[in-house]
Image (cartoon, rainbow, N blue to C red; front, top):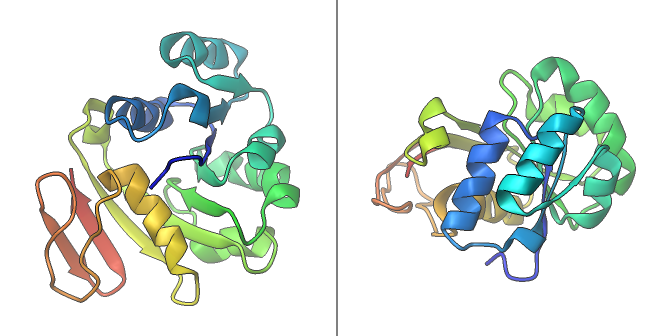
Length: 185
């Protein structure tokens, strides 16, 4: 599902690094399909050396190169991160936020109309590749965004679409309530 696509991380902290490691270990992508930005030069260097991915200082470069953008910055840094990528986001890209407390509406107001936005809330055990993530999208948003998000959190396996239907990630455990999906992997 991710063949030929580039995943960009805006922010390269602990959660982003756990996701990068998971994507590479699951062989969903190769290192040349991942690009990450971070404001800290030491973090960029560390993540480049550890995983062999391309790193850059600004989110604009990530936005231009990636088809899936993962917003992995602290909530207080989200406004600046969105400003940095806004000009490069269009309807062909999926924007996934893992920032706590930042709503889809907040992101949507700062990106061009029609942007595909998904919000995912992974928990701390994802840092050891054994966690869960709640995934939601705005009702009017494209289903492609959810598929892109599923690729990042569930190895691309399709999850249940109807309320109460269980299927999906690694061990098949999933609960769905309304539009929120909780996937255990």
